[in-house]
Length: 338
Image (cartoon, rainbow, N blue to C red; front, top):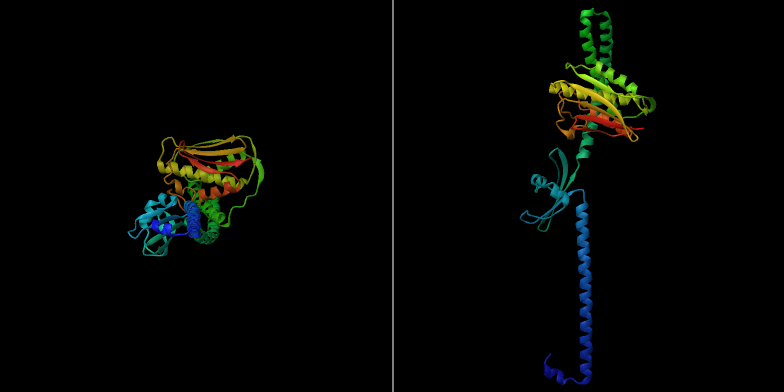
């Protein structure tokens, strides 16, 4: 303020001016404090938004007008190649990429493009399984009756055949048994697994394994070693036998595909803490795709319909156990709580 003006003011005017300056300074402090609070709130909100973006189960990208990434979350960073597959001219659509399915949503706001992708692979898988399961169940029902008739006729034929021809009928019966197993597994899979618990001896499963081996069609001279022991367990014997049957057949197929030297399948039981562990070892071909092992209707074997291991998983999990596999030494295993 001009010094001459200040000199021209009387004492009352100077007092009013001084009070006004004081109020102005106080208001400045108030505004400055409010700005700090607002800035802290903004930073806190920004941090909260960033945290929410990071925990989202979706990939999120924000692009500038030149389609450069200006913001992306952790999920987006893990799926860099996915962004290249997205059609930015569409607003909402589904995309299949690297065996997975995604729903894509694109929002254009001012000069920014917001892209979000959600993995819907499980939903798609369930839809396909429901559809395939329905078809499979229908076919299984249609096949079951004629196969039953053929099985009965084959038994009659065996009793009437000459000794030199009986081995041919036995091969026919084994082939029929294979079809029956596929039909029964399909029906069990589509209806769902329900267990009937009762107490039996583990050694009874050894007999089931031997019967499964004798009823299967294979040509390799495989050595079988079954190491079970005397132990009372509570489980669904029929379903556990089916699990062992599938694992044994899986091992036999792996050996035949690999044409292994000194082919061997070992079925071994052991105890660990409060669990029974059963392992099925073989020296056949290695697992080709680990991601497909327990997937229904998917198989990398030359034989099989892709239901065996998936059904095994359902049965063991219904028993509150676990099932898995190891590469070295190659084996499938499952656990049963005692």
